[in-house]
Length: 473
Image (tube, rainbow, N blue to C red):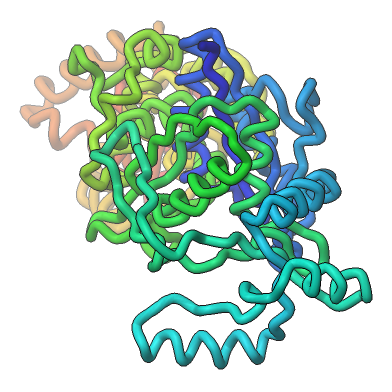
């Protein structure tokens, strides 16, 4: 059987890291089986619709490299891929359920429903909708007369509905505890329940891999598949991403917008690698692996259900590993340069830039830290912090001689600079810890910087000598 998976995000705000997480596993499952990965837009909730959100979802998926095989952008044989463009279809299927006796027209107002719900809650049961008992011919007569109505699922009053989940034991739901869900609203728009079942069937989806928060909705979907006489897909509900306190990930405790990670300068492959470890472990114990490797070894049934903690420090560690151990120096420089250009920092991608990148790669974990930690590489106008100022004040008598030594070096490279410091310290009877800090303070304004000889060589002789001479009071 050819595997077809999907994600169906709602365009209601920022592109969520949870969408990336679920998208990763759906993309992997489909492509390792030579199947298809579909992205459709569930935009029927018009009250929460955000106009530019759909575009940002596409941009997120492109940045991550999780390209769908069918979507509103790619199109395909099962379109349209926006639910708002399929409303006539949902109406047809909802009316088929009415005709077959699996659904009914309901005419209760929101006020009547609120009163009924209050009584039901007090009695510890689901709401009983009076319209359910209307004769079908009477209900149809009222609809034909123009009376506003929704279409509700007629849930069986007895027995149970069993949800078979690939990652869990069968889950049993008593039908008396499942209310008659609205399938089609009075404005003709479907609810999530109807639209996702109809779309999954018509788009040939074989595996519904989604977050575990949808488990309680799944018995409704199982009932719909039965009512239509359709075979069910394989259901697999992934564990939710969690904050460190085990609560569901939320922007109050963790950045949840993928755009935040993009703007901080995280690498998409590092984020994907990290997300792949949320609820799943590489069978060979590898921590660093790419999308192709994930597709090679991933098995959906190996997902574990303990709530995976979205640890930002761990993600930063992953990103640092990619910068230092996975990408080449040239690739880091190229991608960092592109990142800076996107964020309005225009630096030439020349030998000087690449030498600074090489120095700083061991000292950053994300690209956004680069300019924060390197102001002294780009300008003489940088702040001198308190610790650096003390180093300068304590070594005023050394600075003129050190400036002269640096100025007279015939070859201004790291080995020559290091030897100069060694010879000067020996000549003066000083430790290297007394000789090097004031130079570091003079050229960088901070005591936290790369290896000093390497840094001075990168800065160049003229710039270094000028700054050391300037530091003399």
